[in-house]
Length: 245
Image 1 (cartoon, one colour):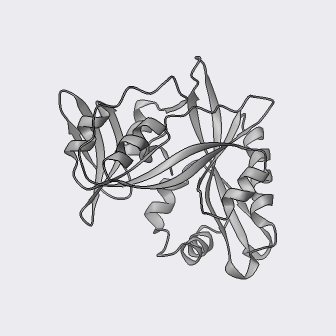
Image 2: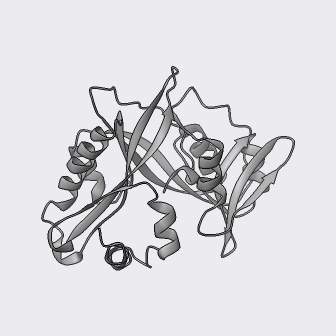
């Protein structure tokens, strides 16, 4: 796989650019790559450990950094990428394949057509105070070793900051007057109310509703969950912004 060419294609296909070499190395560590003929399209599969709501842990693959050159769109590349990603994830022992899409993204239709369970997700931006939010119901979540957590949340391409009070802890990334909230533990409502203008991502509807009621802009999205090896697709997830690549 030609990493410089792959990165150039990503930056060509993503509005405003995708990232630099450091972002590439961080986002795709340990990933498997797919590149279609003549470099018309590409994608990667990352891997995570997931703790299931009823107990037990499984390995999942994550479709990451997918792109199709403008001249090659409409030729079925992304549908092929999803199928190839499922096959690669199966060969790596994964029980599910995940993909992240916004509701208006054309890729969403291809993910749905692949047979994925579409789990609602919410991209949230704004500032304000919110009322108490009940703890989420038992949900699948990504779990990390201490080293993996540090690499995922703290050793990111852009500097992050850890914040902690008696009620909550958070990891944020400050950029252009907005706190990108990668992780919150503890009292979600208190943390959100203290962090000022922010962006966060959640798959927990009650949190999204509380943010919407406080005037936050909410963009709907989905996590596509494709089962592999006959494993049932899990429909309840607790995924935060920092969990995503």
